[in-house]
Amino acid sequence: MRTQILPVQLNSPSGRAAIAKAADMIQSGQLVGFPTETVYGLGADALQAAAVARIFAAKGRPADNPLIAHVCSLEMAEPLADFTPLAARLAERYWPGPLTLVLPRRPLVPDIVSAGLPTVALRFPSHAIAKALIETAATPIAAPSANLSGRPSPTLAAHVYEDMADKIPLILDGGPVQIGLESTVVDARGRYPILLRPGQISAEELAELAGDCLYPTAGSVERPAAPGMKYRHYAPSALVYLAADSSEALLIAARLPARPLFLVSVETAAELAASGIAANRLRPLFKRRDLAPYAQGIFAALRAADTEGEQYIVAEKVAERGLGRAIMNRLTKAAAG
Ligand code: AMP
Ligand code: MG
Image (cartoon, rainbow, N blue to C red; front, top):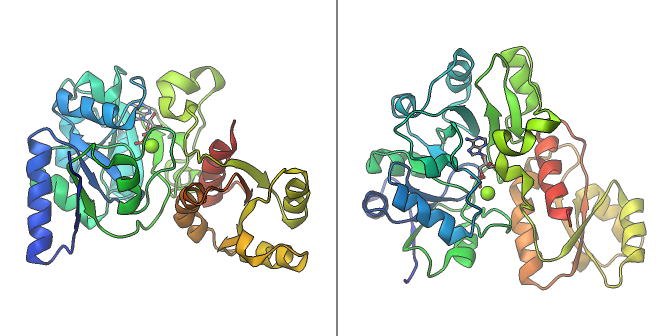
């Protein structure tokens, strides 16, 4: 199958035609790559089990890792799950946006979406193209990140093409995504949110809204919580090491058999350059006071390192609060193994 990439300018006739074509494909059970504000998704009609099965096949995704169903309104979400008072409050505050709610599943949702769990994960994305696609298809769209299982999530249409060429008929190109890390996932079945996967919406913000934010307890993490979190995600082929600062980065580099690529802040890059590291080995991705560009650029940097055949990467750690918790979660997975 040839994969077509269609650039989408929403308020143009060609943009509307691209959305209409993608929506037709979703309705006829095919897969479409599309942008959201977090990362690019690989979508199928969430109500057609056979279409959803194609997602698992295209990604090589383990069958026990459930998908997020994307909606474009509360009205579309309500028949899919039992909304708790907590879920209603979180949806009111954060939807549309990068927050996924895990709730008791209603019978309308096929087993395969939830990987057989009694719950379903729901999100109402804010990206205009994602919203237009779901609205036009007039059905919830099940969509994981549009990467091969185990590869870094795609933040550009070109990344989707790298992983999905000849496996899916269409990719909608909406340019680079805004956030760059996948959504915050919370179990919203109880009184307080349980943070299953950190994202841009932070534990601190959730606690402020809901009175507290809990973490999965050791025994319950893997299956009932967020099964996806147990896999070695976000991994480039290069070996990734994490360094707290420039002196630790230099110590790690000295022990490696080949020159690493440094993914660091502007400040750390200056310190490393001062100690003799060549500028072409340094990728200053952010400033210490502003982590958003690190989140936005980290997956692309990991992919580029693979494309360029890098063997070793030294990435800078950040403090685990706010967005930093989500960045460290992804870095730790990239470095695992
Ligand atoms: P992805 O769409 O690839 O970013 O992955 C979705 C994430 O949400 C994975 O970590 C899943 O395990 C998690 N998830 C999806 N559905 C559920 C669910 N019903 N319960 C808990 N976690 C879920
Ligand atoms: Mg994923």
